[in-house]
Image (tube, rainbow, N blue to C red; front, side):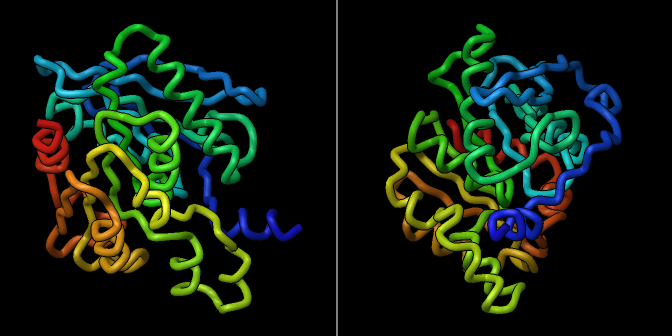
Length: 249
C-alpha cells in the first residue's frame, strides 16, 4: 500500500506520444527492448549526422511525460555529434508495465545491454545522461557499469530531500532512502557534468551544488542563468549539446 502511494506521488507517465524525431528532421529507428522481468520498453535510436561521433548517449528522462517530450533535447545533442538512445521507462509511452525504483533500474540495464548488443556503438564511448529523476537512474547504472562520463541535468540529492520541500513531513518520510544520489555520486568513478537551472523551482540549485561537492574529479557544474526545472534546454539552446560534447573532450 505504502509503496503504491509513494509511486503515485513520484511517477507521472504519459501514454500518448505527441510526435517523433522525424517531426524535427531527425532520422531514427523504433526499438522494442525486453527486460529481464518480462516488460517491453519502447525507445528511439537517433544517430548523429556529425562526424566524428563524439559519444553515444543513453538518455534517461524525468518523472513526467515520455520520449516525445524530449525532441528538443534530441536536436541539440545529435547536432553536437552525439548518438542518442531515448528510452521510455516501464509504464511510459508505449512501454509496458508500471514504474517503480527497481523497475527503472532494470530498464536502464536492459537499455544499455540492447545498445551494446546492437553493434552500432563503441562501449567505451557510452555516456549516461539523466534528467531530474533520470539522473538517479543514470547514477545507479554508472556504479554497476561505468560509462565514459555521466551527465546529470536538474537532478537531486535524494528523493526525500525533494519531498521535504513539496510535501508535509508525514508524506516526505515515506520516501525512505529512495534514489540516494548524494551517497552514490561520492562513489562514482566516471567524470561527471552537472547542468542545473539557476532558479529551479522544483529541485533548487543547492541540490546541484551538494552533488558537485560530493563528486570526485574530474567534475564540472554548469549553472544556467535564469533557467528553471523544465525550461533548461530552451534556455541553453544549441549549447545544451555542445556543452556535453565539449565535456567529453
